[in-house]
Image (spheres, rainbow, N blue to C red):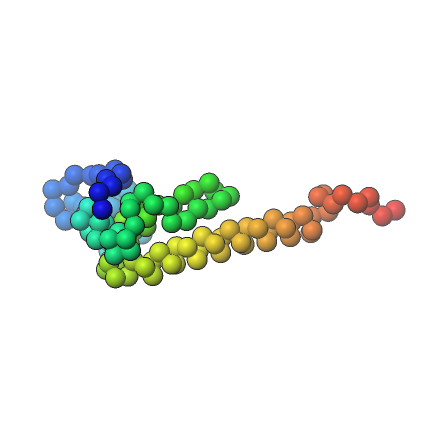
Length: 124
């Protein structure tokens, strides 16, 4: 895998400072995190055979592309092992498809339920 990881890097002196950085940036909700080093992220990506810039999902209504690199970084921070990465990717895919389908259903129901969007004339 030769593609460079493009996420911003932060230089810290030790593990404690890395944890403090995660807390101060809002990357954790108080649960323990594992600082995502480049070798750990690469091991995650190698476990599924993806390049860092590979798009694994797209949330249409938010216009947000989800890259394999970002999924791998989050998996490392959550404490996943490389062998867990295929399951993490499957979960991201399922959540993105479910999110899109729910929004589609809501949009269709909105047109049916909201009287302001009806095209037929109102009854007298």
